[in-house]
Length: 139
Image (cartoon, rainbow, N blue to C red):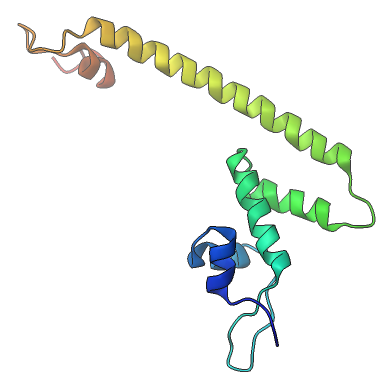
């Protein structure tokens, strides 16, 4: 039986061996055949699938979403581009919401940073710490 060992798949995919095992456990890659000695034998298609998973993760897709994208792309008889488009549009909306949240966080930290002198204050309070602990409620 010819094929790739798990270490070769990991190297070609630029992931670690545990990632390959995890993807197999999560059924993101098919369970590979085994040799008589019990070693997994992977294919180049498995390497491509792992690269697809990693690229999808880099774009913000979760493993559950990636599993759905894989099932769409595995249906060679009828790839539903509209469904893939919907996933992409939904991901864009989620990213835009995250950006808005991050902008709010950035603004809050900027405001707190302006209030902080960076040296010991005469009353021993730091506006950043005070804000993080919920204000003046502990005095």
